[in-house]
Length: 279
Ligand SMILES: [Zn+2]
Image (cartoon, rainbow, N blue to C red; front, side, top):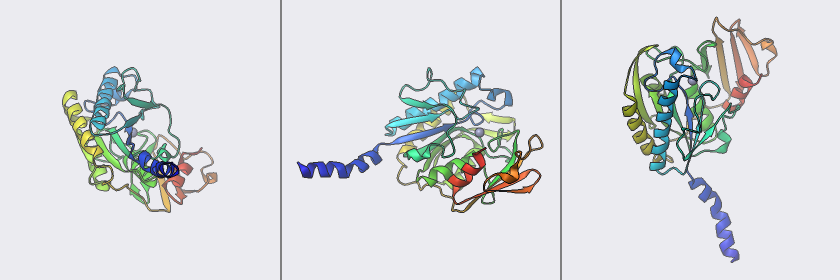
């Protein structure tokens, strides 16, 4: 009996590790059929349907591929876009800001993106931006221009979590491929310019995402988490529509480089990102 209990206790971590939970990060600008700024309004009914359709297709694919749980974060514009009324019945919805660790300390089995756009300043990236179109001209992580794709992948990697799937425009797919070559990619539209695109139909986009999501689950264990070596610098160049935070010089870990650029230094991505996000 004692032996059985010992075996059970010893195998608990393995059983937990085997439960496959996917953390799905969502955004609006990379959704098929979304190509104009007005469509990204979180109250836009058509965009909501298009995004929900792609999210639910990914969720369906993950479960078909062997996932046990899918947690979806409504990442666009303050979590006002997705609804539990129309979310896939087996998915869970995270609403509101994630905090500086992006909830990665929960050590999900894998992270995926749906509706993802590329980083700022990418020609042919549909509504390309790095966290804020109006506020941020450029964001550099250890000197490399980055947007949500790199930052989220690096935060996931910090906690040992791999990125297995991205759906979005071609530019976003190219961006993830550079850092996670084996991730599954579902390209739902091609950007001709910032507001010009060739998009798949919603039905075709959903099919493609569902299949890619199903395949991606089998890559858990073989895709290496993407890691950014510390110490980490995170440099933010604000736009002319924005300015340095008041008292920028007094921010912890911060160095003001010029009148619109600030740089944070942290021992790793978690610390660097936390310094930037804390106000
Ligand atoms: Zn975004």
